[in-house]
Every structure is written in C-alpha cells, then in structure tokens.
Amino acid sequence: MLTSDEAAGRLGIKVETLYAYVSRGQLARVRTPEGSRFNPLDVEELALRRTPRSVVRRGSVVARPLMVLDTDLAVVEDDELYFRGQSARELALTSTVERVAAWIWCADWEAPLTPPPQQDLARAAVLLEALPAGASRIDQLSASAIGLGITDPWREGASAEALHRAGARFLLGVPHLLGGDASREALTVADALWLALSPHSPQTQHVRALNAALILTIDHDLAISTLSGRIAASGRASGYSVLASALGSFASPLHGNTSVSAAALLRSVLEGQAPEHALGEAISTSAARLPGFGHFLYAAGDCRARTLLELLPDLPRGPEVSAVVQALAETVSQRSTLKPNLDLALAAITVAADMQDSDGPLLFGLGRSVGWIAHAISEYAEKPLRLRPQGRYTGP
Image 1 (cartoon, helix red, strand yellow):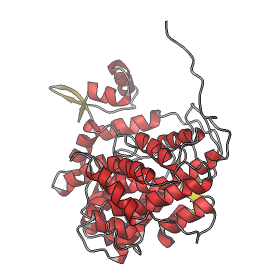
Image 2: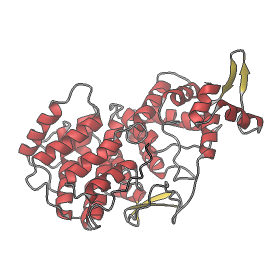
Image 3: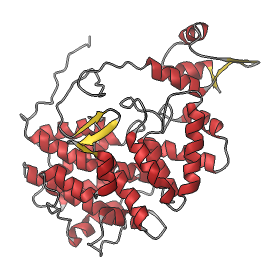
Image 4: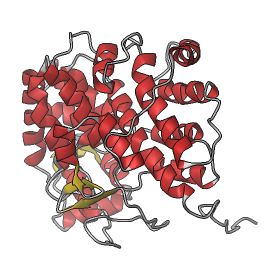
C-alpha cells in the first residue's frame, strides 16, 4: 500500500489534491494507525483516467503537443498495428525479420541484405570487449553501431542505399558480435540471437518467438528514439550515427529499459511473492508507473503483447511464466483497465528462455533498428535540417 505522499507523488499532485479525489469518491483509501494508505493499482487507474487524450489525426494515434510529423511506416487502427498496410501480427507469424527489413527498406521482399565480413566483425568485437563489466545490452548495441561504422569505408554516403547498407550490417552483425557463432553465416538473425542469449539448444518454436519479437518492435509511431534518429538524419548523419543517436534516447527507464523492471516483477512472483505484493512493490520502485501494463495507443490491450504471449508456452520455461503473466494480469484487472503491454511480453520471453533481464531491451533495440533506418531513409527525402527548432529565450 502507498502512503499519501507516495500516492500524490505517483500522480504528480499535491496531497491536498489527493484528498480531494478521495472526498469525491474517485479514489479509495484505507485508514491505518500510521495514516491513510492507498492501493497502488487504484492509484494507477486514476493516473490513467487523468491522462489527456487529444486525437489529432486519423486512427487512435494520440500526439504530444511538440510536433506532428508525417510517417508512412506504422499506424495503429482499431487496436491493431500495421506496417505500410500489412498486419504486424501476420508478418510476425509468417515472415522473418530479414525479409521484412528488405521490404521496408527496399520495397522488395527478396532484396539481399549484406552482412559485415568476418574481419569487420572481429574489429568491432574489440570495441565490445573493451566495455566495462557493468555495460548494459544497450551499451553493447551502441558500441556495435560505432564499431561497424568505423569499419565501413562507405559509411558517409548520403543516400538511401548507404542507410540500408548500415542497417543490414547492424541487424545481421549484432547477433554474431554477441556470440551467436559468427562462423555460421547461414544462420538467421533469430537463430544467431538464440545461440548468443539462451543456454538452451534452439528449437524451431524458440526461434519463431524471437523472430516475432524482432518484427513486432520494428516501429510504433514516433517514439523518442525514433525522433532522435530522424533529427540526426535531418542533419544527414550516416546510418551508424542515426542508430547511435536513436540508441541514446532508447537507453532510458521510460522507453527501452522498461522491460527490465517488468522482468524483475515476473521473477519476484516466480520466486513466491504474491502478485498483489509484487505489483505494489514494482509501482513503488519503478520509474514506469506500472512496468509491463498499459499503453495509451490501445483501448483493448497491446496487440504486440497478445501475439508474443501466445508464443510464450513453447519456450523452455514458458508454461510457468505464462501462469505468472496470467496471475498478474488477473490481479491488475480487478482494480484497473490496464492490460499487458509489449514490455511485459518481452520480459516474459527473456525469462522463459533463461536469458538475462537486459536481453528484453536488446531484442527491442535490434528490432527497432529496422524502423530507425526506415525513418532515416524517409528523412533523407526531406529538406536538410528541417527538424532544427527555434529556441525562445526565457532567461533574465
């Protein structure tokens, strides 16, 4: 249970305003000898109701007041995600991330993607090996972008071809840089990732789940990382610099790293903590209000999460992790309309595969790199430096 100060802090209001909600019957409290206490899920439900929703264009997409940019890549319609008119769910279940990337970048499903040669991988690997022991998976992604860029003699070409060359080298190279058997070039991205991240021998259903995760994370409107990448592309940065710029924004607790908190939530229940207690603790300690639940673009739940959670039982620890996800979702549904989102699904995939908790952001970032490159290609077609805003001085 949350104290008055904690509840007010989560809502971003004064304690006096909190009690105004109580007096109007909008928030329940429990009186204790130590003072009023509030159920964390009640607080999160109230926070959701207080979120402003001003629809500014077609579909269910809600824009922030800063700017609205045209994009032809992803749209959410009727709680379903589409990539250029194709169902993201269908692509995730029937295609590979390599084919989808070729289609998105080149408008050709069969366009070849050229991986970095062995000598480039070896040079980039030196940079990753120099990272300190506490480096995160996103740190490794950033180092990979830098290392693969340094070894590419054509990295500065300001063209769509140079961008998708950089994207292909990154997408195909990262799994091998992480230990996914660089000597076997015939491996798919998902195959190599499984070898690099999981202690279990890869099975078809395992690789299918990883591949689906990569495809479903490709794009999702203009997240802060995507905007960062487009700003870099507006200055005609190379594809590798676009990736590094996007990863800088991605490495944040409210964006790329949220699945780490969701994984900790899952593990706490797997270790015997009651779902309601684990949820309360997660709300009290996480930068995200309730990691793994809710998304403002979806009324009936995140379609990406639904698709990935359907594949969860086929993973090594899938059945027990699925049971925990179900228990958490049922507990949340008793006091809130929040439903599992992509972060919970990514966390569930990594836990069920006996991967590291930080592998959720890795899957997310590698899949999203396809979208970052696609947005950079679109930005190259626009006037250079158009995304440079003008400052308004407010100082003394």
